[in-house]
Image (cartoon, rainbow, N blue to C red; front, side, top):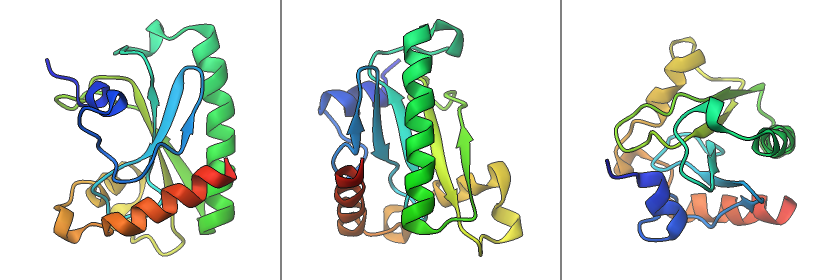
Length: 145
């Protein structure tokens, strides 16, 4: 099956309109797109792996460090109430392990809380945050990482 994450990582068909926010030894951070929520980040393994139990001790260690830094930066920059971290990696073409880091705004409607927040990601590009705004946010975040 075609892997959209691998295509994005290689540069063949990028998902995010912004630059890679962070590149570590094992992981990348990018902004999800299209999205109605600024700061919806995705931490993606640089190698193609489809299950958590396949990750190495070193990959888990770096992931922990990245999650700490990312959640604190999102809180600092966006003033979010809290941050969600989710990993499902089962959508067609997205079996590649990735973690969604989602800033939960103070005013997020009740019907969009928890896993229901994915409604903010399942949008048409015309309803999403403009590409230019995402690009500027990614560049700003990259400079703080």
